[in-house]
Length: 186
Image (cartoon, rainbow, N blue to C red; front, side):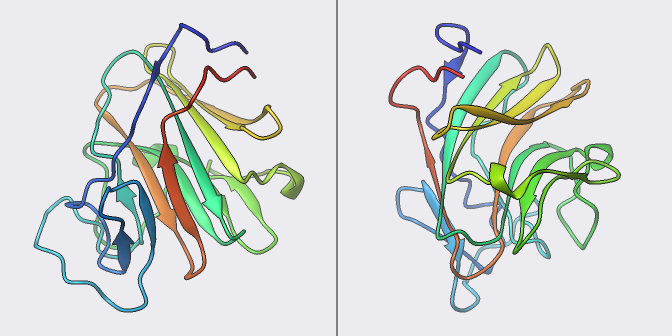
């Protein structure tokens, strides 16, 4: 797919009012990783209290948007999009029915978090992920930027603002959000 001139390339920043207390954000709010100890964070109803997640600052209620995420150190992670009103407290399944459209990577597993989970080939695990959101078409697609290959597409009907979601799930994973330097061609 040629995304040139059909979407808004995003310079996503992380929202410090949503990050779990065990996550450490960089000063420029472009990187997140698990902290070595619990961090002090102000109270926020929007903050994740059980799952180690953080949202992007910007929400989207229309249009086509694209951003890229670098996943360093081959660790565990979750990456995707969620609704403005999605549950943030307690443990719950992060599935489309709950307002979450995500990919999940652990030791020997790679999934699209559908219900039931869609197993993805471990060979598709990317170092750099392109996330493409087409709000009106109801699609969230994930691409391996390095190999220029499609990983998975969720299709749904969106009724509220959507926010990028990032979750480093172990102490070695560093997630970096970036704006594409050029038009991606998949």
